[in-house]
Length: 252
Image (tube, rainbow, N blue to C red; front, top):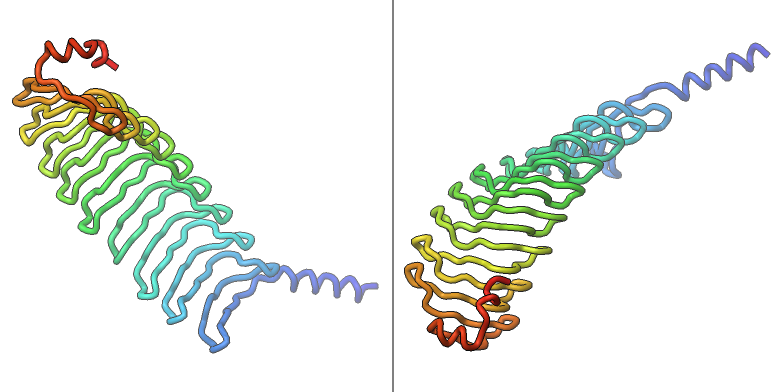
């Protein structure tokens, strides 16, 4: 009876023992190495590319990635780094390309969530804003490579919404107006090189649909009517316009 008890205790100890393991391919090249306990990966592990360079490194807990991890390309350059919990990306992450930081921001349960910054290869900020469940939300800004603001406005579930403003690469306003479900709607204003209104148009689903008012040196010169992007008629004086239309049509 005593022998049986000792045998059971010995087996239990052996089963729960922590051991270091190295895994190789059929040619003997090292593929991974790290700690096992109860046949599950735990603690620190390393994984390798077929050319022998480090592919990734980090910690496991009960066979799932946990804590800080780093990932590398087959040339040894860092491509991303951040935290895991129960095999899901969480908290702050950085993404690299050719050793340059191109993205940084927060994850929650493997999805972008919270503030993110994106960069050009010259390290200049390309765009910035918030995500929720991998979709852009709230206020965003986009920039040209020279650092000038390109556009700014709001997202809703990954689509342009509400009021947006657009600029040229030298910082001058180009256009502004409303979006709904990612498409241009209602009145839009368009500017010339001197930032004076050149024309303004009623849009629907990204197409001219209604009136376009044309200006020269901020003075109204003509009005053109469109239907679903197709030009219908033009007026060059107020009297003829009022004869064919209602001024209230310009408010919609």
